[in-house]
Every structure is written in C-alpha cells, then in structure tokens.
Amino acid sequence: MIFAGIDFPPIAELLNWKPIAFGGTALMFNKIAVLTLLSAAITLALFFFAGRRQNLVPRGIQNLMESAIDFITNSVVIDVMGQEGLAWVPWLTGLFFFILFNNLFEVIPFIQMPATARTSVTIPLALIVYVTFIVVGIKKQGFGGYFKSALVPSGVPVALLILLVPIELLSTFIVRPFALAVRLFGNMLAGHLLLVTFAVISEALFVRSIGLVVLPLPAATLVVLTGYEIFVGFLQAFIFTILTAVYLGESAGGGH
Amino acid sequence: MVFGVVTQSPNPILPSTGEIIWSVISFAILLAVLVKYAFPPVASMMAKRSDKIRDDLEAAESARRDAERLAEERREELGRAREEGQRIIEDARATGEALRQEAAAEAQREAQMVREQAQLQVAAERSRLILELRGELAGMAIELSTRILAHELASSEVDPLVESFLAEADSE
Figure 1: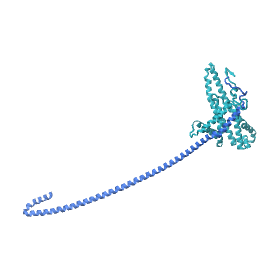
Figure 2 (figure 1 turned 180 degrees about the vertical axis):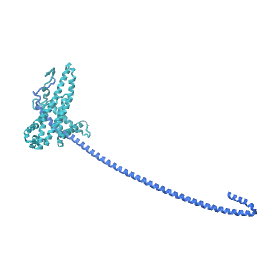
Figure 3 (figure 1 turned 90 degrees about the vertical axis):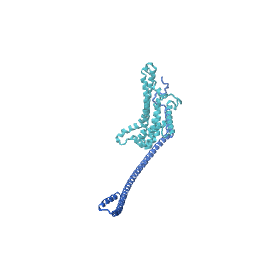
Figure 4 (figure 1 turned 30 degrees about the vertical axis):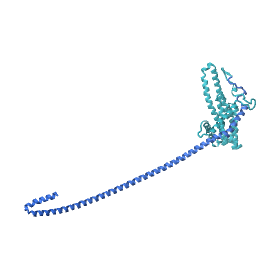
C-alpha cells in the first residue's frame, strides 16, 4: 500500500510469518513458534538461575525473580484469592512471564514481533484459563453447585433470574475467554502496528531528503512509543494474570 | 516492500493451527517444568529466608528482653550498693563522731586530772616552801637573837639590826 509516497506493508505481511519447518502441515513451525518456545525457555532459565544461586541476600537475577514471585504472591494471589490461592502462585507466575516475554519481543531489536499479537497465542491461553477455572469450580463446588453459583446470583428475586441467568451465562462462559484473548491480542497488535507505522514513516522521511526537516518528530515519537509499549507489555501481562486469578478465585470460593 | 514477509493467510487476525499447537506446547512445557523443577528451589529459598528473618527477629527480641532484664538487675544492684555505701558512710561518720566525742571527753578528763595534780603539786610546794621559810625564819630569828645578845647592843641599835636582817631575808 502506498500512501503519500510511503510504502506501508499490508497488515497480513506484518503478522503472518512464513514456515521455518514443517511447512504445509499442522505443525508448521514459524517465527511465532520460535518466540513462544523462547519465552518459555527464558522464563525457565531465569528461574533455574535464580534457584541455583540460593543466596541468603538475593542479588541480580535471584533478586529479580524473587521480587516477581513476591509481586505475584502479594499483589495478585493474596489480594484477589486470599491465602487459599497460594497454591496457584507457580501457575500464575508462569502465565505472567510467558505473556510478558511474548509481549516484550515487540521491542527487542531484530525480533520486533510480539507473539501475543497473534490470536494463535492469545486464544489458546484464554481457553486454557477458561477450562482451568471451570474445572476448578466443578472440583471445588461440584457440577451443580458450581454452575448454580456461577449463573444464579444470590439474593436476587426469582423473577429477575429470567433476565440475569442468561446475562451471567453470557458474561462468565462466553465473554470471559473471548475478552481475555481479544484484550491481549488487540493491545499488542495495536502497539505493534503503531511501532511499524512510525518506523516506516521515519524510514521514508530519512530516505527522502525533504523529509529530513520533519524527521525528528516521527523518530522521537517512535522512541517514546517504544517505551510506552514496554509499559503496555507489563500492564497486559499483569491484567491477564490478575483476571485469571479473579476467575480462579471465584470458581474456588463460590463466586458472587 | 519494507518487510520481506510472505503472506500466508488472507486474514491476519485468524489463528494458524501450527502457531496454536506450538504456543500450547510452549506453555505446557513451561508450566510443567516450572511447577515441578524451576519454581520450588526459588520458593523454598524465599521461605527459608522468611523463616530465618522471623527466627532472627525472635532471637533479637529475646536478647533485647534479656538485656533489659540484666540492665534492670544491674540498676537494682547499683541502687542497693549505693544505699549500702551510704549506710557505711553514715555508720563511719557516727562512729567517728562518737570516737571524737569520747577522745574529747578523755582529753578533758586528763587535762582536768593534770590540772588538779598540778594544783595539788603547787599547793604541796607552797606548803613546803612556807614550812621551809618558817624554818629559815625561825633559824634567822634565833640567829638574830643570838647576835643581839652577843653584841649587847643598845635598844636604839636593835632596829637597824632588825632592818638589815629582814633585808637579808628578803634577798634570800
């Protein structure tokens, strides 16, 4: 696409990556697959490194990882799920770091692609959370008990239930996984497109001599946006994790 | 073309099967290894540290209580020692005063005794002197009488003799 002399790549070119291996099969291995595996590997490496140190006074990576665990434990699990949610700390920490690194690949030079800007990553994650909180609910409260607590708000007149039950059904079992997947995907895709847009503009202005006059503006905006995208990366990982904790806490504790 | 990426799907929003499979595999591996192997050492270290900090705080609190107790004991002992010292000083002062008074009384007694003895000695000396004087006067009187008689002096000559005798007695 060419707008006012700027050659902007089609969105499909920014998001669909050609196969590296197993092309044409269901196991097609491309850049997104590399990134998701890499984020898992980085997370595990950081934890193994932090666990190997075992210093009484934590420093460096050990300190970083312990602070992260502390943050997930206190700001996510204890605040949202209470003490009984502590068993979920490793699970939620893994989820947080997996999403965080997949988000931060957006600003890493030569990678510059958030894996979470693909629904192929966010939809499975949302579905895993969806299945997990339903299973936890059924396990803790029984099949009938869980669906009753999830769909029938307590203390509501029977007449209103005709209206409320479908709303609860829609919000809990349909909108929740959809919103989880789309929120993360939408935010990261938007950020990615913004960065690409300003990079393309900066490049085009740099190439054309006349553009040198206004070059600092898009280039400076690109730098600011890169910083903002780092913040968004952390924020979206935190939001996904805390919402997961809220859903798990509701399922485990009886909701409403 | 800025990016050399080959378009695969007409709709970039739709998920691709391969990416779904690999992202699920990645996440599953991450969770399995993290929960089983990578997370527990870090968490146990944190728990150990919390326990140690709690133990240290408890030990510090107990040490502080011990120190306070010891300081209180020292304070009490010091107070007792001070009272004891004060009592000893007062006893010494009272004893000293008593001794001083006793010594003064003794000195007074002795002085009185010395004075009395001196007075007795003076009186005795005086009596002795008077007696001696009397004896001498008697001797002199006898001597005078003897001289008077020996020289057979006229009565008008007696007076100058008596006068010279008395002057002699005075000079002695």
